[in-house]
Image 1 (cartoon, helix red, strand yellow):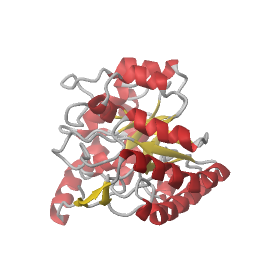
Image 2 (cartoon, one colour):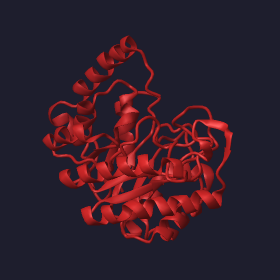
Image 3 (tube, helix red, strand yellow):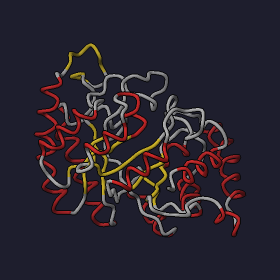
Length: 306
């Protein structure tokens, strides 16, 4: 997803970055965005980075819209967020490449994942970041090779519980949550719209792993977009898992697009359900803009501000 050419990225940045600067200047910016503030909103940077925004562009937009965080960015960016009065709601786990491919379901990757996650937890504790993302991993014994044989669901779950138990004590000591994300395996149109081969595509399967780890610092990243595709029944599933939800992501379905009236998920009642279950964490806007990225972000933030 990051393979754009340098020249193309520069052209996009010139247009996208200029649009950010122009759209968010002075008091006009403060007329849009969060008004009620009962939902803690965050912006997932990579989605806007694909449109040429730098982290500072995203931070400025987030701040001006009344969001409290820019997330899934590494520790090198956290001082910049602090400068803008923002936090990073959830950190990447530090695994290089596509981190959702090599996860705890495969014991061959335990040492690498545990080392990277532990280092990230330490950085989180130092900078006041409260959560780090985690993944089951792909079901193949060599994550990149579908012909390498499959890890069964039972073995994958056992390996995940074993792996997370090796690191969760450190997370507890540092006051950081590990948030395990489920991802859909149905959409094969784009590497960030779906993840065929991922062994954590059902909410109940991921929830069972989290409960077997048995720590208050082991949580679920409940991605509404992925839940809608794989399970549906979003509001009931929020209720069923309210004790283990540590973070929320949004996007429109189909297409992981804007939260507009061309997609099927009805976000206001879902946000009200979060208030009903007394969810105090963050809701990260994680859709891929198809139109004006600023307008899409404004509309999403206002839609979720219930």
